[in-house]
Image: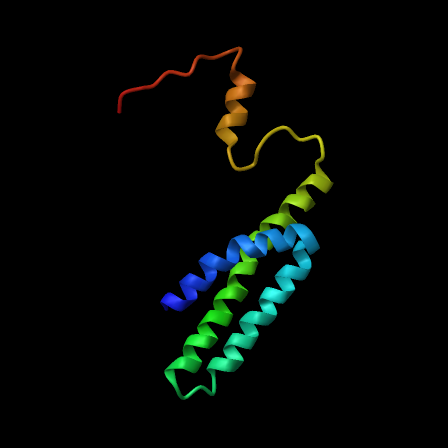
Length: 110
């Protein structure tokens, strides 16, 4: 299991950079192929080193999914709403900006 985590930790920044250079869709598909290849390597394995290699290949494949998916979502959202100023990950920030002239934010004791 540690081989998978180590491969993922090393591969994720690398795959993110590759997604920026050659495109997120290609990196995502390559990661999917690596996950499948890792499964094919590990299925008939009858030794521990072969299983560790399969986990490393699977780790590199799964490390491609998150940065490539985030890049694809970012590009799609920029294409659909190029002038949007609000951030979908922080609706309270957008509300605070909209209400900043009308209401004061105060901390209430619980």
